[in-house]
Image (cartoon, rainbow, N blue to C red):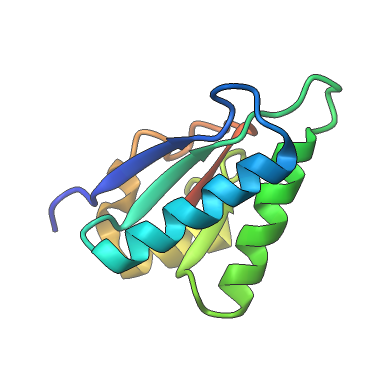
Length: 117
């Protein structure tokens, strides 16, 4: 299987509010679902300046988790977990073997989330 098509979505760009970042995420995901072709999205939401995770990160991950529960997305794995030791990552890799070729595989980045459309 060829490397999966990956889109990068930087929600930190322009320093938006959590509301604005979530709105952009919703629009981008809806557009990607309709257009097809893109299988994975690296969502860059940052970690937050407090050292405990920021508002954008929390909002994005909450919305993505709801989308996965409602089966509107195939999966969403936090960047710090995305790799061979994580059950959700392994489930995605079982369905899409080339997911292991993504640059984020095992990178342990808490400022990102990997989304399977």
